Image (cartoon, rainbow, N blue to C red; front, side, top):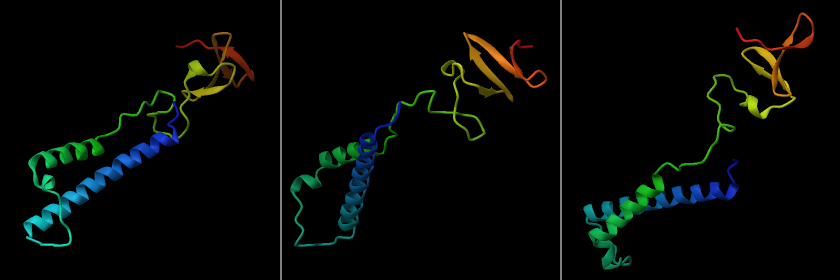
Length: 126
């Protein structure tokens, strides 16, 4: 499953909301603790209530929670080398490398490339 660009923008907007919530909270509490008085900025009385700050905490926590994105096995490879992940079940009639050897699935059977004969041989695991 490929992530759509609109999904990315939803995540970006979510993080920006989190940043704005944190910035507002820091500015509010810094002004309150520092007893800063700005007569031109008059906040509604609801802003001073614990319920408002509880809602802000919930919104801030939601904005910073990890997003559970649906990545499948086709998009994720845990191998140390940087190459595309190949699922042998998805590769039919196309050579793929596995355990340092080249293989191909032909009619449901694994064939391994034999350098000595320069041909595909049936794969027989040890």
